[in-house]
Image 1: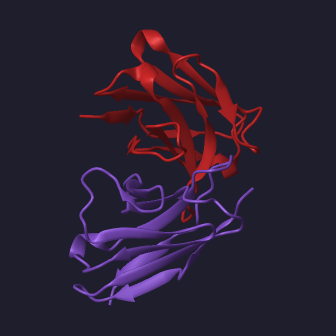
Image 2 (image 1 turned 90 degrees about the vertical axis):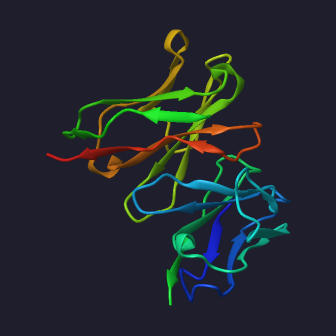
Image 3 (image 1 turned 90 degrees about the horizontal axis):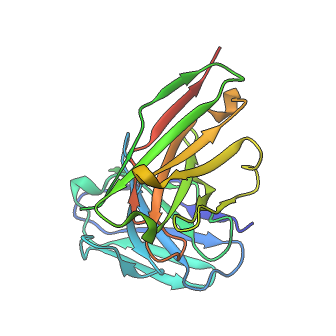
Length: 107
Length: 119
């Protein structure tokens, strides 16, 4: 199974600043990578699929990049509603594995 | 618009069984596969597998064979997750989610069903 490793575990950023979250796959997943946002008590919400395509209704401040084993989610100017936990997930191989998450907190 | 509505939280004793319903709306039920995820407290989601809503064929991830069963009732356009012989470590939130292109990512999720297994 492909292991997804996210870093850092917790990221403290001030509103208005840029946040950069990383995700590494234990083997190549090509561009088969999705990002989700999860707030307490809610289901995950799809942000990005195919490594860099924003899902319907996702603001342009969210962008994804990378291929192979290294991926990045960038939030260009943090809004208050962006503070949450973010998960990456590989879509290429079964089982479709998720990372353990990065908690984005207010600095 | 698209919604997936799941059944309410359950409190079960070890050894019991539970049935979780997932009812999509806003699209044709048989068009997209339904996937199931488990999220233990403080952990990331874990993919359990999926069911083809056209044929009813389930596929299970390793670790979710035997006690876990995916099924459909097409007459009420509802998918189900049935778990038998519940253990304390099955305590988690269970989600159903739609895979829009059979591409392995999930664009709409149910609200989650908390299953608590405790004596």
